[in-house]
Image 1 (tube, rainbow, N blue to C red):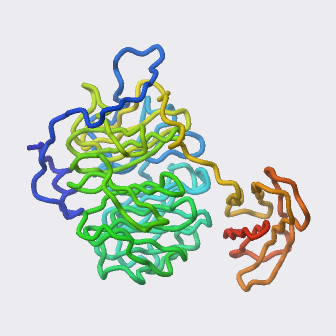
Image 2: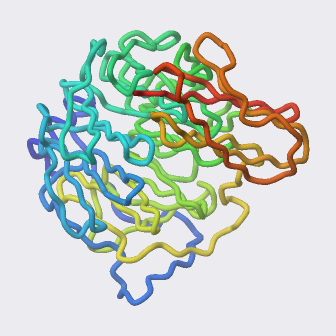
Image 3: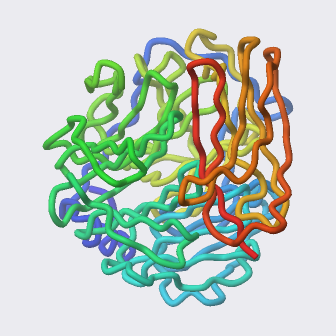
Length: 432
């Protein structure tokens, strides 16, 4: 039996887990092992970065590489030196149990979901926090996600999903199609912009209209705790007791992956296609073949309860544990794996404008794969065209344009890229 301290008891109560946990024996899970290099490092795979006695529910990394840890009973911590040192950043927080963290626009805004006090927002890299709960009628926030248009989704305990279109200033319920009083453990934005919601044994739901409505994709009677957007053709789900599953959006079907029955708390993947699973009971597992087989990714320094994962841009993997703080791989991960499972870049891409929100100038980037007529236009919320940035034939390639919105009113705008039969629209906010 795993030790149950007060933090863990509270975690079980809020998340409606079982009253006991079974520790699984460590054993190799997969037959194939990718080669990885730990240059200049001994056989130590993991090193403890600090927060030794802290239970870490969530880890987030902003565009500057700063790390944020959401703790179970200790608020929020920040590290600006790759985890070497940590400092508490709790000014303005009224709740010390933080279940979820989300970063918007590379770090312009940070959001934190708490146990009973709703959502907090920081606009100064965590130095201070402001509670943002207008319209948020259920304030036990277990999960957060932000789509490319800047819409924020909050998954709650027994209150379903709420949505904010103004950076958290106001919220509205977005539960059409969900089971009443849903527990939403995780929210995930897929590469195509669809939103997925993992629930407590009622299935995984998908929205193709920014949360206006939800449809069930399957996984009923499975307690799904985490979701991962892996490739355009593959999504992963981690479940309590039941390991990991794969979803093919085209076939609309879920199937078990090769990870044996275990408690999966979080999933992440790197640019090489490796998938990592945080599990409660057997540490971290890794797959190098797209989830077909898995192996233990532990050493003597990390094992047991791992609740959260995050990958830095330098290739370090961070693991938040159930009471021993945060561990980091001793060196960036360098692997040799089957290139067929690597993430494939999209050939028609409209990027989110930057900065967003903006005042008054913002930048747009897009990529097209074929020569042809291209238009990039901007519309206000009424559908009125307010600017045309591109309207000409262009060769295949990457492009950058800028819009100066002086003379336009504050509010929400949309920009649409059209190339041949392909068309994509994104949302932005002019905030004066």
